[in-house]
Image (cartoon, rainbow, N blue to C red):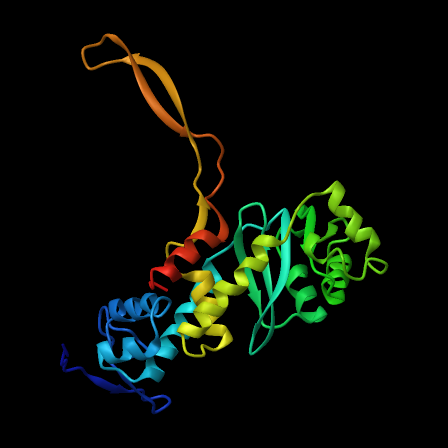
Length: 275
């Protein structure tokens, strides 16, 4: 359905530029409603750009631009909790990319464009609550170790048990740390097959598109909402008699916590063909 609207066009007498009359509920950047722009953004996290463009009757480039703007807004608003048990691994998508996970919650926290030391240091250095990270599980990739030691010197590095049999001499302190801190990076490494499936189904998504679909798809986040506690109070009822009333209050003034992308939910959506 298309909507034709007659609008006024004005010219600024000071600078000579022309501009159109603003319309309610119409997106200022595109000739479509705000609701359609939001819908396209939401759908682009679950579907291919080509299928959305075909359904709406738009150019695929327009869908990609809306997707990019939508993801930029999500980057500003979606915040994942910093894991106390962090996993660092990599996945090869065109080239090696760094994967950050929350081992305790079995969730994805972030995907970095590469696994270089500078990139990892920049991410960890700007991470809220990085001093609360207790252990970091990883393989024997030196840039990971150096980045963690540079930014989070108090965090204990633990080499994943599957890599213990290699390079024992060079990594002995970190390898033996597993026995004092038995955390494993298995959940992070299990992401590799899921990400490869998504990349294959998307017929070659760009890294930015694949990262956004993994991190920001609605319904895959592991969230913990503030708890309420029951409280009974005595007060007069409408007839003037003493009565007991039940109220519910927050246990603590904490906001909702988002621990990242739940791996099991992500796997289920992929298997059902919904991602």
